[in-house]
Amino acid sequence: MQVHITNIYGQGFTSTALKAQNRTAAFARELHYKELGIYNYDVNSDSPQMLASRLDGIIASVGYGDIVIFQYPTWNHISFDEAFIRRISRYRGLKKIIFVHDIPSLMFESNRYLLERHIAFFNQADLLILPSQRMADFLYTKGLTVKKTVIQKMWDFPVSVDVTFRPQFRKVINFAGNPESWKFGFVKNWNYDSVELKVTADKGDWAQGKNVSFLGWFNEDTFLVNALRHSGGFGLVWSDNAYWCEYMKLNTNYKLSAYLAAGIPVIVNSSISEKDTIIRRNLGLAVDSLDEAVSRIGNMKEDEYNRMAADAEIFSALIREGYFAKKALTDAVYQLLYD
Picture 1 (cartoon, helix red, strand yellow):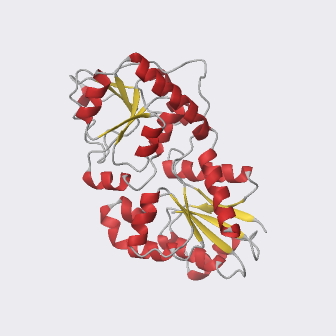
Picture 2 (cartoon, rainbow, N blue to C red):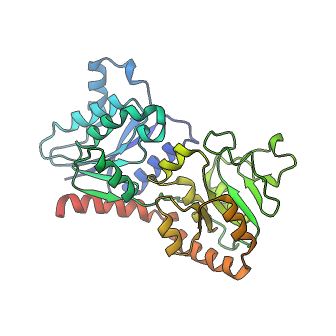
Picture 3 (cartoon, rainbow, N blue to C red):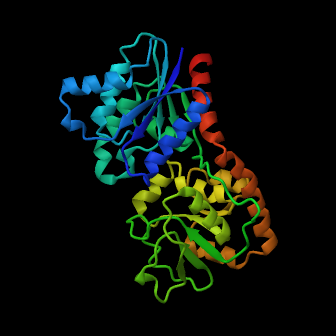
């Protein structure tokens, strides 16, 4: 028996989706899983015969009785994902694991009509790896029937950091996100004089007169994480878009792991899926508003911050060494074959 895992190619090298799948596949290779490469393309350009040939090329190394971990979505049209699962389902004794990174029908309100189709797709799996228990609970209310699940909890962020430098207590909030995005309207409306907002973007004229500065844009995650580490203060996981806030209750946030990999405490909305971990492990603050976040930073003592930073540094080893992905991938195979 061999274990295989899909991995996408062909997206822009700054794509978060690409990085997440490539990193997961890299950790899987450490476990001696075999890779099945999938290119990002317009599936509508294929005739049924061309698609069948393409799929046969991808799964050429798959045999009867193997396990295939399908990283979802491929960001091709869902018809490609469906065709892939149909193709491997022909193999006698083969087991299918779907590793759910994101669900497009939940990410974007305009795609909500596809949710039933996506759940029907998931129901073809023998086991699902899901971002959070909340996501699992939600999907079960919508018709999910897969009995076996593994919960991912957090993304890994395998980078090297400057361990000779420790994050410093500053009344600064770092935000690793695009200030032009519809999800992050609060960035351009920052009006707090007591706490500076540092944005990982190039300087914009909109920040004139505001307590906002810029760390610059980083294509390479190692540079991003070390810039955050040297900036000190806190990392912010936030959105003021109502629909995206609802999705953040279910998904696993990539930037949360970037901050923790940097060893800086985080500020998160108290409704996000991993809020309990943040509080239990003293990794930062869970708040209901930015007003509350700014107030708590204003009243914080340096020794309180240093304890959080020290705890974040310890926790960061899990994220920088890929233990969340390795555990999920190992638990999935173990549960599938043992339980």
